[in-house]
Image 1 (cartoon, one colour):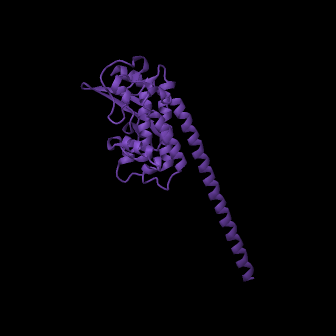
Image 2 (cartoon, rainbow, N blue to C red):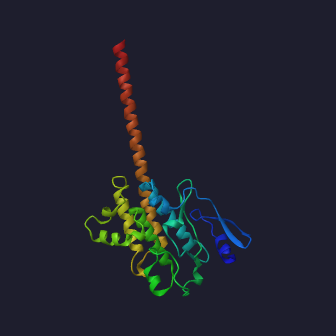
Image 3 (tube, rainbow, N blue to C red):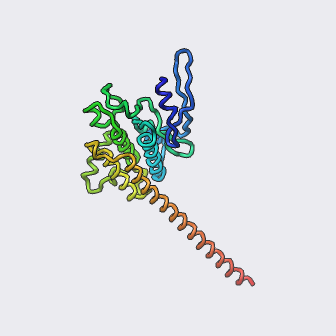
Length: 260
């Protein structure tokens, strides 16, 4: 417990759920984290009446990548999460995502010990299952699964990987398993770009998977494209309002002249 508190206490990043404190009461040890009002990504994707827009999903993926990037490349020594999953991604009141639950986290210097399999079925790196050695690339694999959840809203326990594999061989590709809520409500090119990086994260060989830094760079390019698209849409909307205003002004002027 003390080691976990020490680990959590030194990790501070806008995309990590912060440890507020801990207490011991009647032999019970409790960790206290910041409150995340919008709950978990898992609940938002699969709960009844829930609806996440494509822009929100893209931002969530972007936030997660930054949280993992801090753990892998910003923390000293680096930290491997070991249990990344949609249930451990929490959303605040602004729908910004934060990585949570470091119960299985280990500093990299302790990695490689054969202490039994840890993690959650459906998110576990196959290479870890065969070697019992968890690496940063195992976190990358889990992140790839989460990205495909964001795209498809198919849970790993519902044969997500089978759907992804079949889609890769199909003419329609990722378009064929896109979440129905996103059909005609997303930028399909951004979806395809995100799917490409997710496929790389799931590569059978850990050495051929990208680092989280590489993933974040791709995510940043997609995010900038999304922001540019939003600005264009806003500009188009303003232009339309200006045209409508000019038309109303002309109509009002004509009516005024007719009444004179």
